[in-house]
Structure formats: structure tokens, C-alpha cells
Figure 1 (cartoon, rainbow, N blue to C red):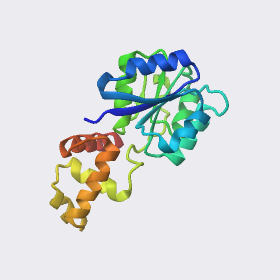
Figure 2: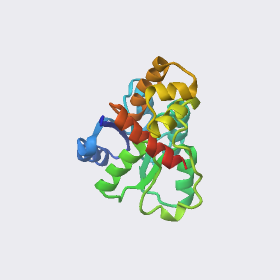
Figure 3: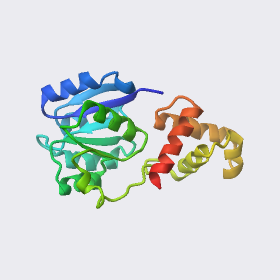
Length: 209
């Protein structure tokens, strides 16, 4: 499976750099960049090659909540995993409402953080230990909202194990068009072949139910 590309935004340099060093290479994770505030992130956003953003909420200047909301609008394909010290219900809700795909507290273990990164990268929603009391009231978000309607149709058929021509017949489009959609979906899913794509599609489908 292709590496999961991660960027970190945290104003504590020692924590940020230490986390980057610990995550690099773990479970296929590659840390591509780190920033100390939202403005530094925005200055590189167009050129940033990243799947998951680890975002602290307490930042100088624009807050992590404001950054999450902006990124959800401008980069909806980017998965935001909040990693912060706050675990109160109101803050967890606000982060999810802003567009975060997951929420962990900084006391989480490295294994938990790595698993959460992988989970949100394939469209799953994650709430870590310490935020359980906020689980029930949280709104449910469709993990496939970053995909177009047609891409979701292809994903659903892919999850069922349909072949390229079966997808084409079901959707009334050409096999070449299906292959073009599959190529785009492989990139969005961060996978390299059809088997990996089908597995990721099934995970997305199950998470949306």
C-alpha cells in the first residue's frame, strides 16, 4: 500500500519534531512537512503533498478550529486528525463540526496515533480514548463526502467486487471512462491496485452506514 503522507501543525517545536521522528516509517507513514502555525501551513498549502494533517487546536494566530474549517472548505480531500490537550465535549464537537475526521488527546500512545492516522486516511472516523463521553452527541459525517456522486457510485460497485465492464454496464458509461475514474480513485484512496482499492471502498462503505 502507498505510504500515508502526514503533515504536523503544532507550535511546540520539540513535540512536533519528536512526533515526526517517531511516526516516520511506522505503518507506512511518511511525514512530509511540519509547521508551527496555520499561516506557515497556508503558505505551503498549494504545493503540499499530504493525506492526513495532524493539527493542534492551540496555535498562535489563527486557531486550530479556524484552520480546520478553512481546510475543510479549500481542501476537502485532506483528512484532519486533531491532536491536542483539550478533551472537553464542547471542543470535540466544535472540531468535528469544523471538519475534523478524528480527535485524539496528546496523552495518546504512539500506536494509537499511528492507527488513527491510517484509519482517517481511508475515510474512517476516529475518536480516541479520553473523548468517549463526547461520542454519542457527535454528528455523523459521510466519510465519502470528498468524492463526487459518480465516484461514490464507482466506489460502491468496486466494493461489491464488480469488474470494470460490469461497472460500465451498470452506470451506462464506457470501460475507458470507468478506468479513468479508477485511476482518480486510486490516487484519492492512496492505493496502487484494484484489490487495495476494493478493500478501501468496502471500508468507506461500512463507515458510511
